[in-house]
Length: 488
Image 1 (cartoon, rainbow, N blue to C red):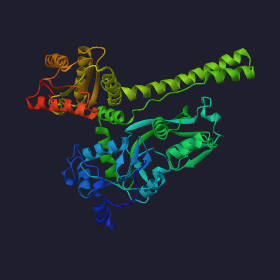
Image 2: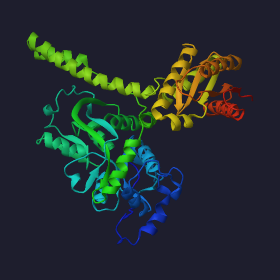
Image 3: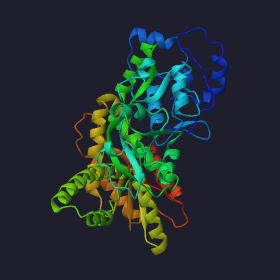
Image 4: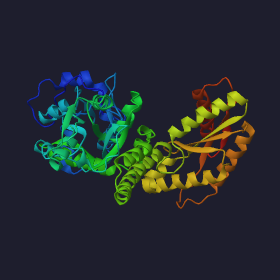
């Protein structure tokens, strides 16, 4: 949430005193989230008469965000809202059927000031605090993030945050974690910073003991800026339960957003997270340092065992968190097959191997035919189960050296090393027949269209994938439920 706020747009959805909204709207219209554009948005949730009347009386909804909090949120160099929260807000705009207009601010503190002054109607996401409840109302949470502590790599794991409350701990100014931790630990020594990279920089340079934020933010910023001496050392008992924050003088707007939040499917949530959280997190425990400290201190044997048990238990918690994040970084959460991150990484390895050893490499791209009608007729839950069964069926049909991954939505890729075009076409046809003959438990037949291509040594990765996509398009043009090979 962190890159894009320069221009202030004050829109009163139900108050007549605003005189400059039309001018600002014209300047910022391109920042709106919309599935199509403007009034062409189609509402996808059922509203009460009061809620519908409220939306009819407004042209758009104004929104403030955290301009620098990737991977969750950012205003980029072009003034566009990107990140996990941006993708959620696009879905909310689609469900509500109303444009959401970005109001640019310089930082999160200014966004809080703007929404308090009614210069924007909503915050894209915010944690509930007592202070914020004075001017905001909150939807049900749409996502939950654990709050952790990052320190230098030469620090020991933190078993209990109470042992470091006297140390200088950096947190971004205005973040809910400040109020949450101060309530629990009144003596905590917090240093407020402008953004995540400023806080992590203070830790790296020894000016702060730790930086408090979410795992994904810390991993993203340290990797992006090349900060190598930072590790996740502790997990607090607090979480960010992220909700859409709505100005508390418009209860109809709150109920509308609550319905939009409730309409988001698990598949949509997982797809959004999968697109943005594609980083590997590692926890390093310096056992050599621990051993030297134990020898130097010379504690009695029983106390050493007791201490080690505590450390091991806590490290196990950290490792479990890191394993979960690593799994998320490589695996599609719904189907269990590879995600785009792992596919792209494997593409690079295989292309390097092909160019070095002049071996064969083919790519199969398949797409479920008329999948939208499955979701519309039977519901997203049934659609999810079909995708899971489809992934299992394909996985059982390929070799252990092949890699299947979910490319997006109902589209899958199969990377086939040491395979020429004819071999890949035969495999694709076998997969197509297995799927068309399978009983998926619905009245509508489930079939796939498949495109196949073989890598040519002069191709870039983008052209390699594009040739499979072109073949898939030809298969759909030929009537679907068929296989087509790309010919150069």
